[in-house]
Image (cartoon, protein in one colour):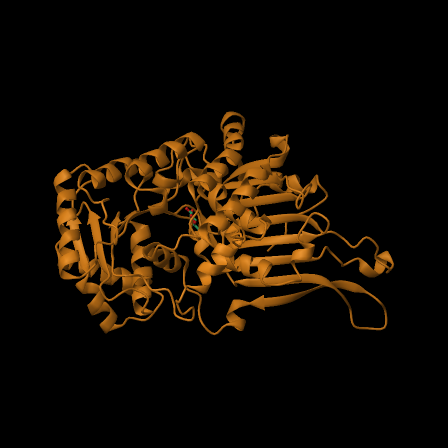
Length: 517
Ligand code: BG6
C-alpha cells in the first residue's frame, strides 16, 4: 500500500487543521501562580508587577491568578499588598480598577526569607500548596528570578530541595530568568548546566525584553508578510545595516549591576544581536519556537568579526558635562563607581554575516548611555542606483535609499528615497515616507513585559531565546571582550553627543557615516 509521505511541513499543516482554537480569541494564561524572587527590586516594582496588573486589567490572566513575593523583608501580607498597590498606582499602563485590584489582591502571598534559609523555602512550598487548594492554581507555578545571577544556583537548588520543581503531568513548573546569562561562553554553559539539573530547557524561559516589543516582532511581519521588501533584502541591493540603541540616561543607581559589565555585555551581546538575527534571518517555516530559533541560530553561527578589531570596534565612557540643559556627572564620578573602573558605557562594532544573502555587507552596531537622545532603530541602507541619469549638480542632496525600522520611541517605519523638488528644474533630493504606530492603530501597544509574562505563563516560548542562541552570542562577542579587556581603555565622550569620534571613524574609513537619528 502506498502511504502518503508526511514531511514535517505537512504534519504541521495537519496539526493546525485540527487545532480548534478560535484564533480571534486572545491568549489567556491558565490558572497559575507566579513566584517572584527579588520582588522588592526595581525591575519587579517598575515593570513586572505593573505588567501583571495590566494583564489582569485586560482580562488576560485567569481569575485564579496568584502572585507570591519572596524577599528578606519582614512584611505582613498587608504590607505586601500596600507595596504592590503602590507599584501599580505608580507604574501601571492601564487605569486603576477596583474590581481588578480586589481580585488581584486576593491572590497575593508573601514569604519572608533569605536564599540560604531552608525553612523559608519550606514555607514557600506550603504557600504554593495552599494556593492550589484555596485559589485553584492547579499546581501551576512559575519562578521568576529577578535577582543577581550569582544567586541563581542557590535559589534553584533550594527549589529542587523543597520539591518545588516537581510537577504532575497536568501542571507546570517553570523558571524565568533575566540576563546576564553568564559572563562569557564558559560561564553561560555552566549556568545552563546548573539550571538544567532542576528545570528542563523547555521549562526555562530567558527574558530578552527586546523580543517582547511590538516593533521588534513587526520586523518579522514586515519582512515576511509583504512582497516588496524581501527581493531587495540582500547583498545585491543592501549597502550596509546600522543598528543603534541609544539612551540619554546615565547609569542612575545601577552601579552595582553595571560596573564591570558595561554597555556591550549589557545590551549588545543580547538585544542588539537578537535584532541583527531577526533582520538577517531567512524566512522561518512557521513561527514556532523551534523554527524561529533554527533561523536565528543560523544567522548567529554565520557572524564573522573583522580581522582588525582595533579599527572596527570602539568602547567609550561618558565624561561629566551637560545634557538636556542639565549638568550631569561623568561615569567615574557616579555613586559607587571605583576610580579604577574600566567599564564601557558606549560600544560600537562592525560585523559580517557570512551567508550568500549577506556576503560582504557590514552590520554596524552601536549602543551607549548619555547619548544624543533615546532611540533604537535598524537602518537598512541601500546601494546607490548603478546609473543616475541626472547631472551631478541636480542630485547633490540625494543620499542612499534607506528603510529605517524605528523600534522606539515614535515606533514606526520610514522609507527614504529621492524625489523631484517642485519647480522648473530637475533637482532631486531625499524625502521620507512614514508609517507610525500612533497614527495607524488606535490601540496602544502592550509593553514588552506584559507580552513576555503572559507568554511565559501560557507556555508560549517563541519570543524567548534558547540556550544555543545565548551561547552563539557569547561566542561572537567573547573575542572582542577579550581584546578590549587586554588592550583597550574606553575613550571619553561628552554627554549628549553620539559617542567618541573613534566610532565615527569605523564607518568613515569605509566611506560611510552613522545616521543621526
Ligand atoms: C536593559 C539594560 O536590558 O535595557 C539597561 O540592562 C537599559 O541598561 C535597558 O537601560 C533599556 O531598555 P529599553 O526598553 O528602555 O530600551
